[in-house]
Amino acid sequence: MQKLKQANLYRSELIPVSGKLVERYNKCLIKLGFTPTKLANFSIDGIGWSPEIAEEKKNLHYLNNGEANPHAILISPLQKGMPVYVPFHSFDREMMQLVFRTHRQKINDITRDSAICLDFDQNIDAFYEPLDLLKYDKVTIHFHLMDNLDAVQKEQLTLIEIFKHGHNFIDENLHQQLLESSKTYGDLRDRDLELHELQYSTDSFYTKAFGGVYVLRDFISDILVFEDLKWYKEAIKDTTHEVLIYHISQPELMEKLRDHIIIECDLEAIAKTARYERIKKFEFASDLKETQHPIKTILNDKVLFKSYLNKLDIDSRKRVMSVERYLEKLEVSNQFKIADIVDAKFYEALHQPHSSLSSKHIDLIWKLLINVSAKDVLFLYWYDKEQFYKSYDTWDASLKEWVIQEIRNNI
Image (tube, rainbow, N blue to C red; front, side):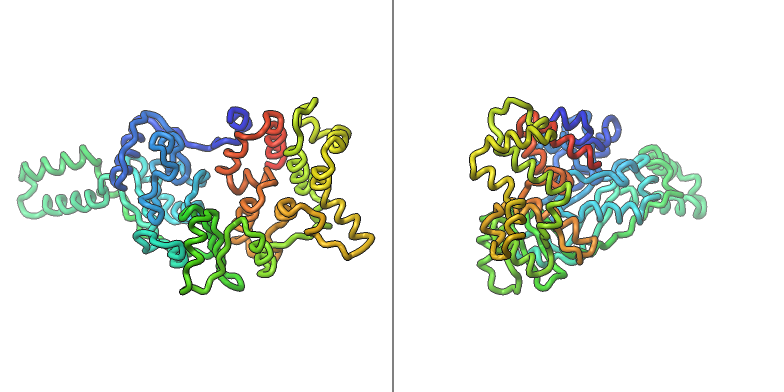
């Protein structure tokens, strides 16, 4: 990952945490029912997730109390607008944007000397079967202040009112209570600590529950797409819900998405784009073995590209150039079918969200498409960083350099 870090492409926007902030963070972990971290220094993202703590706990989603109960921790106003690097839902960043848009000033004030725990409540205490995901409607965002600071504020105000009444101003016990409270929590009289709950409405989304599921709504019919084969087999046993259910590897899925006007692919148009060239080069690189030149150089040099293309076996050569071959044959006769000439996974990788989709659905469908066929390294980085990092570790060193080049050229 060192090259990615040097190129600022690997979790480059984390906030360092040390000193008093560690103590506040641990109090939040305990309040949420988790064990505190033993780390003296770590970093967090916009939702309060830390890669170092995740590694320490050997749990990527350590801020979840089960798959149905995700949480967040706010210890700094700097978390506003920061990336959410390992979202459990595709709408996690949008929820954090709503939080800061509504309560920014109060968050700035509270996190000066305290911290805030967030509970994302969709009125589901626990998942029992995959189609429980259809219950998602509105997520209520609850706020809990560290040390119950809002309750302490009410206690201080109550003590002050008692202090003002009659001759209580000479009560030494009352004096002591006020002094101890102010020393421990500060003077809370004029602090605005009331964070009213928020509601976020869901539509189509992706969740990592049940091994990863796409819940597509607002279309001709509801569609569930499972990444995990075990949970897909469990879901298709359901006979009570009117919903289409697919595993992400099923060829029928792409056909259904096209029929429902969710995705599209115009090969003649896509073949003229930089995205097509990027996908074709990555497909080509997967066939290169024991080359005399670095892969990055081969992919960037047209002469070397042709040279190594002609060194491939005939089947590999046909697959890499299958789109060009199909379009050439189409000029002669319209009797040829795409499936007869163009490699299936290659063709799937060339699809895009349908032009009629609203902006709120486009990113989700891009993520789905890149998970169906992960051949566009740029879009894989944009829409599924976790999978990108896993794949990156398996690539040739020179291919890694080309991938970094492609990403950097498109930032």
